Image 1 (cartoon, one colour):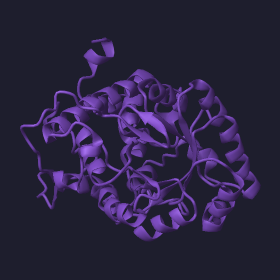
Image 2 (cartoon, helix red, strand yellow):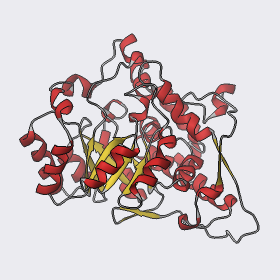
Image 3 (cartoon, one colour):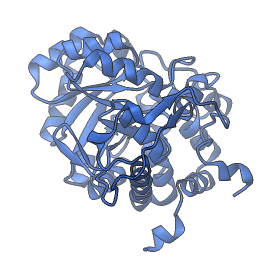
Length: 361
């Protein structure tokens, strides 16, 4: 085991290390949500309310954790979700995340408000990457970003569609904290507010690139996405950072899966902090699972190698969970391995997945 493996053997050790390294403002930006943070807490509560129904006496000596998304093989069904202001967690920002993902065998998504930017991040590694855009300009501005992403070799292009208005993130306001990306990019928001399905249709007609929409929270919009030729429907509530009092992302997932009926791939994020969370989402029909705060804990704690070590521990947890459920590959997993309505045993705060933290560890 290398030095990083000796230093970090639990996911919660990254949480603790990140907290120690980050300023109060950056930390609260990372872990916080909107207003009362009800949506953020429901993301965790949704996972905690699902229990497993394991099967036994099966040969699980070899467990295959790999899958595919957009034709790309993933070592584990995980995508590093787009996070704004990655440069506030580590100076290498999106480049470090992209290198870690590529080296480990998963896909990273670069936010349009993270440094070092579209082209520089693409040049940082050869692995598959997705570019995510906040609309801050007119049609020509948007199409220029699509062309640049295609020219730079991005695997797919993603529009985030749940940021028409910037939510009241009270942790940030209380500390008068503004991220580096927000101070630069928090302008021209009227373009995002005007962006609509007709714009998606225009992009679909003009560009031959897989398209994703991030921020789908209902079956109705999932069906519209499929009707508009979207390749990946991304179920997300922005990690609880936008509309407060929404549903947990895992609670939304089943209706989206049913409405799409296999006509598009499905990605989900929101509250994913454990390998068991990944398994639950996959059992409910996700094609892959996004991790946001979790990979940022690794980035803040130890840069690129920290992100890679997070993925390594996550893979160990996923493999063990699948084996203890009695399955050896994702195609064997379905909803029969889950039981909804499990009683809560802990709070749904962002660190609730790591109980040792409450004991002063």
